[in-house]
Length: 511
Image (spheres, one colour):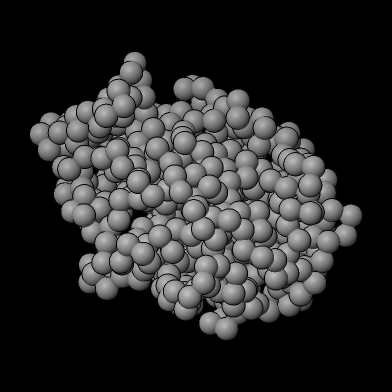
């Protein structure tokens, strides 16, 4: 689940909800050149020459921040550092990450995508990165990250990984054009049958009222979520009767593939959805060509803004849940959007300085600087709402640039976005609260299987290829049945299931 950029327009935005939850909303975060906050046993801006720190991360803004960005300079000033940041686009992030890991030529602070990055996890086990467990207690803001999230990214019970924290609720799930539902005379769908009826109507009933057959029901981004709904799972693994089961071998996955194949035949999905990139999916929604897409609760507002340029009534709404025979569900977030590691080649003194930098970024002051920039340069505050300036756009100041590095935990982070009307903001908070009643988490986060690290990618590729062939009608569903039968008879595949279960039981027992 990735976090998307906040479009920086010259519109009003709500102050960070973390600030709203305390009485000193504005006094705690004055912006500008505020003094460094206390981090650990010292201050972020200690004496002596600046510490040079190289960082590899991602960005989702239209352009990455330039090397001389004023926010970078301000972070350097407040933390007594010299930062060299390598920014990777969403389409190239994972590939560049893998090249760095394979070569061993890594920066001082490196962002990896998730806990399923086999190269990174293998290297952690081999001792290539710092074990931060003994040090984190000295950094008050990093120590304030929720235990549930921190525990989920431990490897062998130790904290090698620092998560880029995100809320647990409000993460990516289906969202739908409410105005199109109104145009075709349908209510918000809740069951998978109602969902299908709505998507088909978006294809056949001219939902945009332009008298052209030029719309799709669903752009296909993260189509695997359809399988999740039929399994009432959040990904491949699901707990049942105290054990983990592999949903790829379950009836729910088969039902989901039949459902997706029907969608493809009814032209609800674009013909080339498998080959589309992240930006393609988003551009399709912005162009008013699709009624259902996948994004975070607030991230969808970016598509709404784009679609409103063509139709002022355009309104994507995050769905609260969907229901199959397995029950009602919505995906609960992992609690992070990427993970940071510090190579062991970094000296201990510099490692501590990096933690101090990240700790400052996790303070209210640092969070504001990262996400909103400098007061009266990148934003102004009027009646408790931040108003972004044109300079913020020019400098690529956003939650999805510097906010990809520096983040504090805010349970309502995914309720608001720069430029969002207050009514939409309040609606999103209610959706997030309601989702807590139906949330299903990914139980496999942080679990390890040595056999999966070695053979899992090959098994996954074979399964994914067959899923796509079934969805596109190139193979019948019986071909999927045959593959499942083969995998159930494969000793190595079943060993992966056993090892994940052992890891799961070890985690439950506190090992």
